[in-house]
Amino acid sequence: MRKFWIDTDTASDDAVAILMALQAPDVEVLGISVVAGNVPVDMGCQNAGYTVEVCEKNVPVYRGTALPLSREPSYAYFFHGPDGMGGMNYPATKTPIQTGGVEAMVNAIRKNPGEITLVTLGPLTNIANALALAPDIAKKVKICYLMAGAACTVGNVTPAAEYNVWFDPEAAYAVYHSGMKMVQVGWELCRGEANISDSEQADLRAIGTRRAEFAIDCNRQAVATNKKWLGDPSLPLPDPVTMAIALDPGIARRQGDYYVDIAYGQANTDGMTIVDERNVLQKPKTVTVVWEIDVPAWKRMLRESLL
Amino acid sequence: MRKLIIDTDPGVDDAMMILAALRAPELDVIGLTTVFGNCPVEIGTQNALRLLELEGHGDIPVSKGCGKALVVPLGEFPANVHGDDGLGNASFEAPKGKPLARHAAQFIIDTCKAFPGEVTLAPIGPLSNIGLALQLCPELPKYVREVVIMGGSCYAGGNISPVAEANIYHDPHAADMVFRADWPVVMVGLDVTQQIVMDNSFLNKLYAAQTPATDFLKRIQPLYQAFHANIYGFTAGEIHTHDPSVTAYLVKPDLFGTLETPVHVETNGRCMGFTIADPLKQWGERRAAKVCTRVNAEGVKNLLYDLLAR
Image (cartoon, rainbow over all chains, first blue to last red; front, side, top):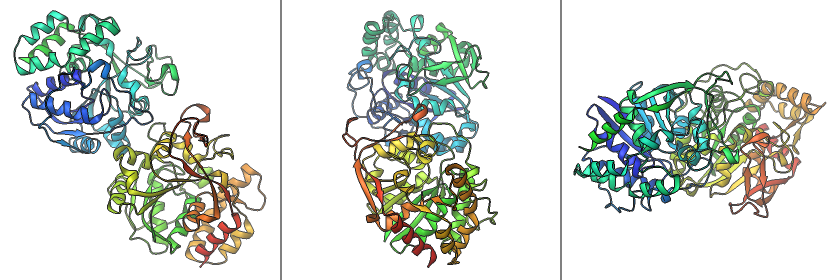
């Protein structure tokens, strides 16, 4: 069994990504730590806990950091709905929510050196705090898949920045400079053809499992907002695309290693992921950046997790 | 007695602060936590143990903390000020004790929760441990009595850049977390510490006392004096009294005059580490800190003399 740890600001697309990991037959999710991001940390805990419940699994959910390092939180209700779950107002989760998310993550990594695949689906505050508390974990994580950034392309909250990085760019800076083995899956990889179209959503929901209905229903506000706001075809699922690559790295069809920096304190480029594509800075390459994914394979994996 | 955790990067002036605090009957030092700054955190942790053991306080726990800032990368250590060993290259033997296994931030959280409302934090290095403790435990402020910082400079210019004091500069993000949190903060910064000058005549009188503390200080301070002579052109062995002023404030706060003002920390660019006082609250609401702006310098020196020489 491969060992995963998921760090998440659980709203609708996070829920689907968590679901995919929990359904993967060869993966053991050791824990889920929640961070402020799409929604406040307590709401994220509820959503993560409920997702675990929908999958009928027994995975611990930990409350992590409630505030970004240097900023006021700026939640994404407009995208994910007032509950982060498309306004579905799911019942209060029965999954127990534990405290100490950062410490729990550190302990799990130290107990399993070189074994844990870390998947981050939200702002990087928990990871930055974990690295401050335990710098040794940078070399003890097997590999970290980051749903983060926009590699040499437009942002989604500002022209320059993707939401997860923009929400806490100082934390992202600390993580990107930590020396951990990292793969960046930018938001651009879930756009266009990688969107789940209206008819694909209908097909998936028609699978009829509780998981399938849950995965589509909780994303209903994201569909509406994405069409209107970003002019994309339908449902974008950045977190599930990231999880798909973590589960099957072959889904990343084209990637490369680069020095990647994070802009902070720069006003109009705050939270920008600066990929030194041409290596003009001649700095050590720190991050693997995914450029292209196998869209049919990604969609097959999503479907299989809902059967 | 006021329960005190000293968060420190020892450090020549940290040494005088700690030795004086350990000798003050008003203060009950219940732990030292260490952070990078004047020297690497591993070396500073050895120094903390050494300072406790010097006069029989080896029972006080030491907890090692952050080796770098929460966000900004690690720079070079000021070996020209504090020596490669943080103690003026005075070549001491290894201490006997060991630090706790717990990280300093966790030690601070656990200890403050164990004595709600009783513990004062005295950070005299970069504020990384305190910032991390606030991140891990946002309710920490309600357990803490007071935070008395050596750091910052509102109106006196900087010592590591034209505007920044070194402790704040080394972790400006953590510093801003501390000034943003809802707890009583006292800033003992360059506004006052540069007004308190110890010269050879004061130091020689101190060394003449020949207590273990003054003998120790006599060994470690020459390099620190040489640095001050080089950078400020001093000719009589003068040094500024940075960290020890916190001990003085804790024992006799009425030696200081304060300005109640919110403080913001610049985290970017060449003004990074500037502590900006905003007494008119033009940058919005933030709990006012007490910024020390006036000091009875002779009173501080006399107090430190009495603590260290007796």
